[in-house]
Length: 138
Length: 138
DNA sequence: TTTGACCTTAACCTCATAGGAAGGTTTATC
DNA sequence: GATAAACCTTCCTATGAGGTTAAGGTCAAA
Image (cartoon, rainbow over all chains, first blue to last red; front, side, top):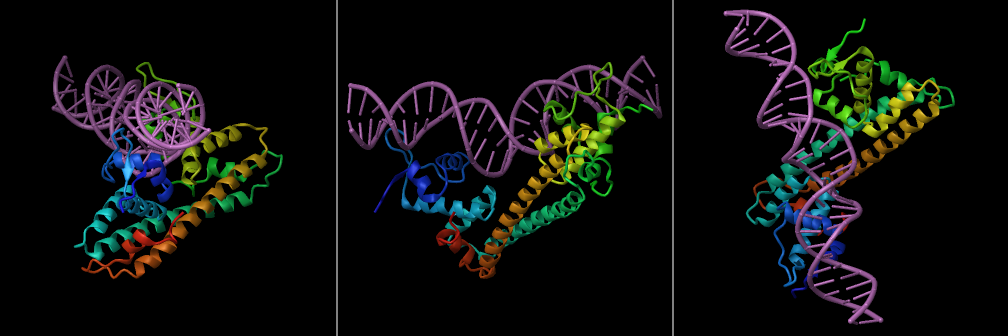
């Protein structure tokens, strides 16, 4: 039936925090939930599913604005799956780019760190690179 | 000898923005620079080298607080290279962790997106996963 | 000398995504 | 009826920047 949860229970069930649920409401990502007479937010199972949806999308790294679009598409029975897929693929590109950036850093830093003895002497190739290298500029 | 640059030129030379240089000064990362009578900041070649150092460290993904430590070590002739190397390796670990996270997202999302046709029909495996999957929880 | 272009200044706001604390109300439990 | 737990709002913090505004400084050409 209409089981209604308070924000704390909705948080536990969804894996979000109560804080985040309020934030999402405040930023317009989710609709304002009904309240008890005393002002407590109440969530039904449909809203709970929305919260779970958001949590899973966050776990996949989607931004809140992407999630806004995903929620709208999800709730629109006339949607074209093409739009969802495009969104996902553009996100996948961002992920790839970030991975590449990080790997670039990793590669440079690993190499530089290897040639640092890491002992009690002040001589350190890492600092030397930071101080003088021209190959690290951008 | 003592060539002095205004903040705009120091920014160009270092690859930072004037805005960021002011921020770094304000947050204590770099010392307050001398000023002209009318209040313009002036940078000598030593300070310029510091700015370049910061830029290169940022390019390697070091946080500003890491950079603070790196600058202190750099300027301390009694430093132990061990400390620098530890800092670098702890940063390398963070990088590895981020890469793993992203690769995890990439893997899941790629798989899910593959089975979405991406056409004009509403049926979409991506939304289905976000709506129902239990394997994506955390 | 004035105008215009461009620089700099400080103080503020915004972004995304949260965490935390303060201070007050409500509900649940003993 | 007391106390603890949950909830409420509002504001501050962090990260690392970007943007805006309104003012004043500098310099060269006309």
